[in-house]
Each structure stands twice: as C-alpha cells, then as structure tokens.
Image (cartoon, rainbow, N blue to C red; front, side, top):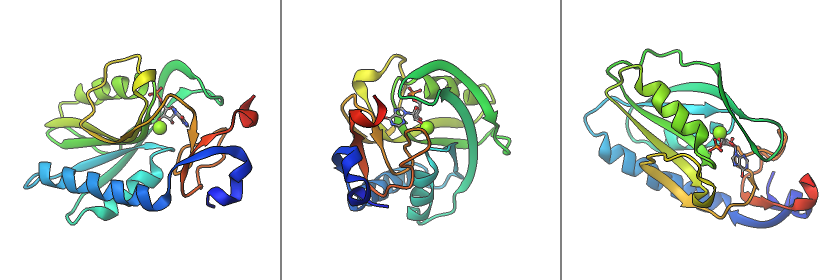
Length: 183
Ligand code: IMP
Ligand code: MG
C-alpha cells in the first residue's frame, strides 16, 4: 500500500518509495566499494529489515550472502523495553567472515549495540552496521554505524518494514505516525 491508502494515520510522508530506492542504491554502492575483493555476508534483522535487505541485496552488482537474525527489544508499543533476546540465531558460522548488519532503524541503539558485541565475539573478520534510518536524539548507547541512510527526528515512523503493532510494514513509503493512532 502507499501513503494515500493510510493518509489519515500519517502526520506526513518522510520519504517516498522513490527516495528510499535511490538512497538504498547509494548505500549499496558505498558498501560495494568498501568490500571490493572480499566476500561479504549481510545479516538482516527480522522483521523490520526485510524490505531494506531485499532492495539492498538486489542493488549489488556482485555476489553477496544473506542471513537473518531475529531479536526482541521492543514490546508491542512505541517504547524500547531495554531487553534484548535472540529469537532466531544465524545459520552461518561467521568466524573469519566480513559481516554487515542491515537494519531499518536505530532508535535507542540498544539492539544494535548488543548485537554488534554479540557478533564480534564470534571472531568475524569484521562487523559493520548499515541502517536506513537513525534517530540521533534517541540514542542511549554508543553505536558505531558505518552506513546511514538518513538521520531523522525523534518521532515514531512507520512503513517500509517499520511497524506499529505489526501494521504498516507493507507501506511503500515511510511516514510519521499520527499520535491518534497510538494514544
Ligand atoms: P533500538 O534498540 O531502540 O535502537 O530499536 C530497536 C528496534 O525498535 C528497531 O529495529 C525497530 O524495529 C524498532 N523501532 C525503533 N524506532 C521505531 C520507529 O520509529 N518505528 C517503528 N519501529 C521502531
Ligand atoms: Mg529492527
């Protein structure tokens, strides 16, 4: 669906489908340059990163392996619970591998800070983070992010994999959720 289908639920559209595609192509090109001559494993964080992973992987003009992890750090609302738990681990042994964690958003940074140290303890050749969105004002944990699509204000956004109570993930655009939806 697109923003027009849920226009009553959105305060504004932050990024259109076309802008998102363009930015992801740029990020993929950057990663491609940095990992030239190296094998690369991209790890998507379920479920939010599904769209970013699908589009980023197809933007590469090279081979790339894909794996997935699922962690829980959020309840069903709009606030971080502060607890990270692995719901689904990697199928890949990452020792000696170059890994890029792909996520759709960094909010408090809790999830990715925890994940980075978890994956780093498995002796990979390298671990970096690529995220489409980041909320600098919400950061509570220092996270070293190599690839960022856009920095955004500290507001709750939905679409392109980002959900509110499992809805809006299939929205093509990214928009700010109207407070009346969650209050
Ligand atoms: P963090 O651990 O607070 O950095 O955020 C972890 C996860 O919370 C993200 O990967 C998202 O799944 C979710 N999240 C954070 N901010 C938003 C938002 O604005 N909309 C939807 N999901 C969000
Ligand atoms: Mg996520």
